[in-house]
Length: 303
Image (cartoon, rainbow, N blue to C red; front, side, top):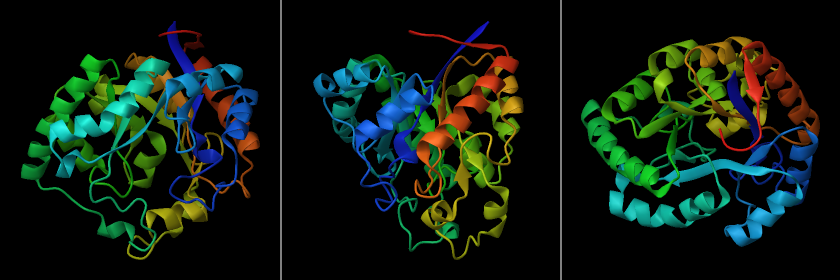
């Protein structure tokens, strides 16, 4: 029996890049509703305490674990040594709290948080630049592994690693210390077949985000006019069970490649239009059914 755990990201309640979406919602609301929706853990966000002596008792109060959390990496334009120094406070927090990994997103030159820049104008890397970047990322990931917080690289809309070609080249340019975060929603948004990533890079996947996509919104977007944040505000993302993605197929393929670990529900939405607790429960129920059908067993403690 394969082992899995269910987590959720706080972005459903409060979006760090769009403070108008739930900016007034207290962290306690996010935590108690995550627990009520049936999740075992949460990923961190901007409202989370930055020291373990405060965060750990807060999570215990709501019977939640710290799953992982986003780290805004800048290795593309930074040295490995300076990046390590920048990352250490967050890595120490994660290690102290028992987080499974560090979710690394490359934010050097990103347009993911710039509402006035259309998606078509994202930064792109040449093969030579990918090779150089991959060498630095591998060294940084080796440090993360030795420190006790493995790196999970997050391909993401609006960044230099967004589509199939980006992911393929990055995996070829890095060693196995660079784990891959599989995000169903960002893949489909970028025009990537999730099955292709699972089959080509399954052995590198160390963390899973289960985000769904609303097909009608996706097809209506103009990449030469709409920014990534415009797409979020229009409602392109939603929770599993409310969009176009077949999560039974995804979990079955993950089971076939032997993935065990966290499955995290994540969906940037307007909480006024998509009540977080209601949608969290939809995502939880959908994933529990898909995981069970694929042969997973939800467990407590370490996997």
